[in-house]
Length: 158
Ligand SMILES: Cc1cc2nc3c(=O)[nH]c(=O)nc-3n(C[C@H](O)[C@H](O)[C@H](O)COP(=O)(O)O)c2cc1C
Image (cartoon, rainbow, N blue to C red; front, side, top):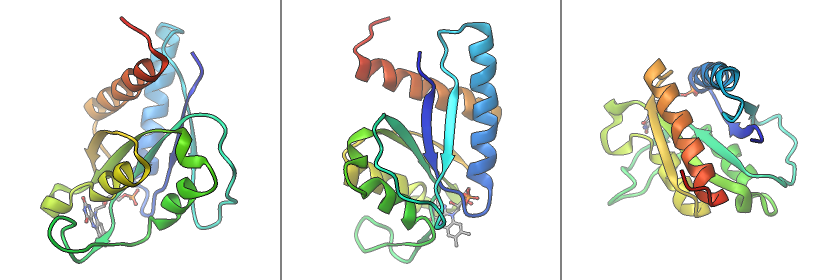
């Protein structure tokens, strides 16, 4: 199986840390059975050159919102906008397989709301969420969610 491609953004390092652990977890899974895909992750930041994407990828986005709850009044996305702009660039949204969100449950209705908004805006499923830097159980669950989504789009039946 091809490596799983991930595009992510991380402002304070939590998402970057989770992706590092997730990449290690995927490598371990691949070592036990090479049918299990590895992960190739790319960080998007304000310094990134926008590229036209030509292969499928997942995006991982934390939540930074100011005001509003996104349900019955407006929200303003802070800090993470460049990832949304990257996905909106040329045909990049066409290759988006799914969105993984992170945040902090203390934000209640706003928990992972940016990922939910991206999923709706770019017409891709919101496949998983985790809090802050995640825990090992989150690595296993998020990896399984990506593998399941790949099987779904590739038409595999277990
Ligand atoms: C100013 C600020 C606003 C935030 N707003 C939200 C929010 O609306 N919803 C949420 O779930 N988490 C919110 N968070 C929590 C972050 O999404 C969380 O800490 C995340 O792990 C940060 O990822 P990063 O370290 O990769 O940037 C906020 C954090 C900060 C500092």
